[in-house]
Image 1: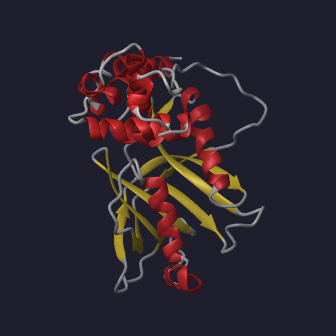
Image 2 (image 1 turned 90 degrees about the vertical axis):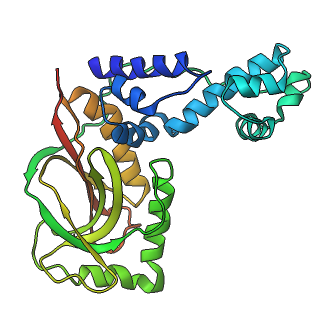
Length: 289
């Protein structure tokens, strides 16, 4: 229950500061996790990014203020927008109508309520995992070059995998050719985390082979992992599993997400097969307190 209470304390802080500056580092502190992991786990648990949630809550309150007769420019400033134009754009993105229409009472608007986390007991489907200690190992492969943030990581990962599979998947085949028996033996998707911050995504293999031109090499640091098997077509099966890991397994496990590199392991070429095999390796540490 402590994990749930931490998340609710973080939501309390957001509510208290919707009309001011919201420090994401403070949100993470109240949630008792790193900023990196808060922003990583939030979409899996809530179905939206943390930034989207804050924007929706601000625009929900802004709509109520406008409906009560407040001026558009006053409401824009109240919720941190320096110009009515930027406020109107954000307002329309959330509500689908202009602020002036709500202010005049000629349009409906939506309300996005405050999030409250509760413990939900689920037992309809067992979750099997194993805890594995892994020494550091070297990986070689293709690193994403475009600008990634925690807000656009999902979209960027999809685009990056599409790029790697162009030309009949030649880039993937070139990576797989570097496999030399080094563990773990699979095609790897590695999200690197340095000092609690996202520092890049690489698709590669564990290998001692020289790094070819056009590829990069990095070291995955030693970590303790919770390892989960996944069966089903990509990316839906893995996304569903990651949601269950973060929403169901992690809160009751006695562990927390460690500031280490996350791993996806892919076995075989046909990723859209109904029985496709993959794994999620979540870096963990014993929860403090």
